[in-house]
Length: 152
Image (cartoon, rainbow, N blue to C red):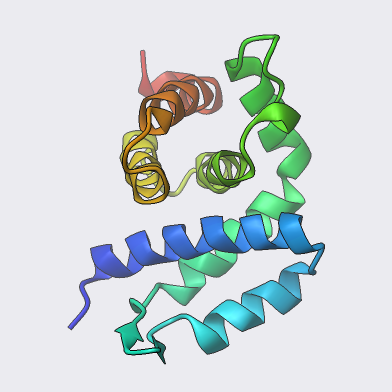
């Protein structure tokens, strides 16, 4: 049995993967969304069982990340040093920023929860690297911009 928290965490991981896939392959939101819902959520492939995910959260993150991408990318750019605009960031890290940014813009998830969740996602993709610290710093900046009242 999968807990609600685990399903939300899986949805976040899948959202990052979907955003990466959309950027890498120029596939549409609807096409990628359907692929993930049909072939990843709870699927068994080559003996591996994929986690169940919260489809509603996955859908909301993807929809907001795409519809609010300009705003999210601007927030991300303001959190980065001038030498490293978002288009120079690793595409997986960029997808993490966009998914997390979508949750920060939506505002349903407490900012500190979103930061912890996406730092964990970054550790899943980069277990040996420093990316998780970088993700933490940028998301902290973005969260403070999106919700200054929660950090006063």
